[in-house]
Amino acid sequence: MEYENLNENVKKCQYAVRGELYLRASELQKEGKKIIFTNVGNPHALGQKPLTFPRQVVALCQAPFLLDDPNVGLIFPADAIARAKHYLSVTSGGLGAYSDSRGLPGVRKEVAEFIERRDGYPSDPELIFLTDGASKGVMQILQTIIRGPSDGILVPVPQYPLYSATISLLGGSLVPYYLEETANWGLDIGNLRQSVTQARSQGLTVRAMVIINPGNPTGQCLSVANLKEVIKFCYQNNLVLLGDEVYQQNIYQDERPFISARKVLMDMGSPMNKAVQLVSFHTVSKGYWGECGQRGGYFEMTNIPPQTVEEIYKVASISLSPNVPGQIFMGLMVNPLKPGDISYDNFVRESKGILESLRRRAQIMTDGFNSCRNVVCNFTEGAMYSFPQIRLPPKAIEAAKKAGKVPDVFYCLKLLESTGISTVPGSGFGQKEGVFHLRTTILPAEEEMPAIMDSFKKFNDEFMEQYEDYKGYSRI
Image (cartoon, rainbow, N blue to C red; front, side, top):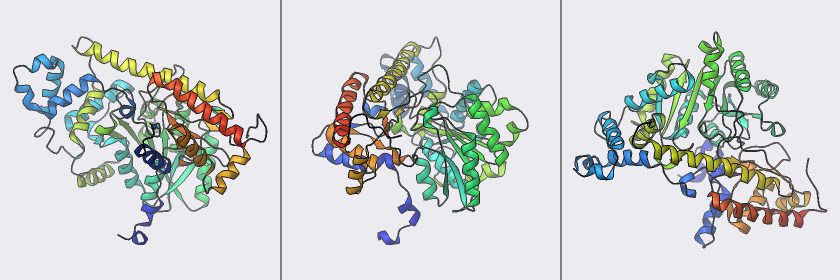
């Protein structure tokens, strides 16, 4: 497997979240430097405690012999015991046995019931596939859609690099549509049309459109009006809509609550609700669960032809089964405790505490960035990230070029070396020419956040002092 003989698509794909900055941060950590890993949305790694009830249920499922212990009720609450028995009963031999390649039918039914409660429209468990995290589902669907380099996928820029990396890996073409930073990362249909027209002029067949709602890395929540425009656009252009909705629990304002693309599509009625093909993704990795390492996710298909569903099932079968503990976590997330359950009050206290703290942290981080010289940051309406614009002076850009670095990579490396804060440069997500950003999670512990922002401000002000010709320089 010499490098020169590798698949060229493997060489082309880039994943900035675990790129140069992360590797350098890992080196510094080995050398003894304290590193704050804000480069990836990994809540438990930054101190978020797991929710008690789902861990109790999965612990009992992993060690079912505990259920036979006469003292089990002294350690585990009755509702956790009952739920564990339920999940074990819907497996074919416990958590160590393969499930159906689409996932356990009992859990898929729970997902369908969750979707119906959320959207007000029935959902078919046969059109729901459980996956090892949402990322695996995205890869499965893109693999189904992309036939070769002339197939284009519309992706928002800035975008989560899962999309650019997977499209490269599969040999397709990414068609960017730019979100408007001055309009709080809003989506402009005129820009979408322009992107499609340009792609077609280059000989591409645009096959699908990705939306990330709430946005990663941009944190915006799409309005109903925006979603209607997107669906109408997909209808007019015969595009499959891929709805990345993994942050739907992470909402930090009241003006724009999360509304699923599926609900808006169904509300729009005929002909669109029967014609627009939609695949929606969700996960246990985000929200107030943050169970990234459990790898639980699903995708639901709407208006996808039966023959296509069969082909997706066939390809899923090659991997035999998504991991079963992840499926149980998904079942617990979509079918949560109810008022009157023994563990309900504690579950609500834990989950509410996490979400309220995240809301406060989003504000602390936004305010902190906006207090810094030559830094502008939109409020994080949802998801887990801040994406401030860093207005780099010409001298800093020149210094980056001399060092052989992209300007925002240069800035982020200096930030890392000085403060131990590990971020991701905006260039890893895509951005307009001559504009620079970084992405950081809002996940560090709330009590540590003021000190982290003070550390950032001190570094940034010193950096700007070093590279500015005069105070108050800003880049348009």
